[in-house]
Length: 184
Image (cartoon, rainbow, N blue to C red; front, side, top):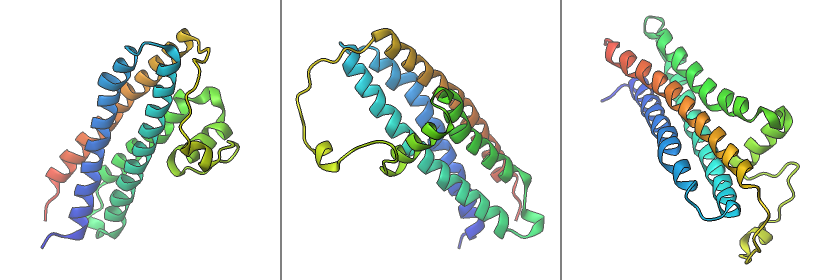
């Protein structure tokens, strides 16, 4: 039977691999495809939905990674508490929360925290939304959305995911080498 500590390390490392793939596919496939949409209002709506879903899945997987890695670290006997697990968690936290805040620092800390809370849980603090209104599908008229601002927002989001790919990839590589170096 597999040791729960080893399984926890493995799950944390696999989650880092998924985070790396999520950021890579967003930066190299999803966002460039959004640039091909015909109108800036459509591109803006799609970009906002992609950002929301990416943030939600990134923070969920990041929480799973940190939980598994910290569990494995603190439950392990002292001779198996390797510092690579702490480095994995630090890189994971910096990449998920730190880079998200850095690339959205124009919002300010309070507004960024409200957006993160809304995107991950659906709670609306400061945002007025009624679930019944969200369920109704309305045909909206074309809004006046500046195409250059949408382009800048796409470029900022793409840069963030490129940097995230490298940081998550580094944490993933540390995890692979650490798992490989673990001895019974």
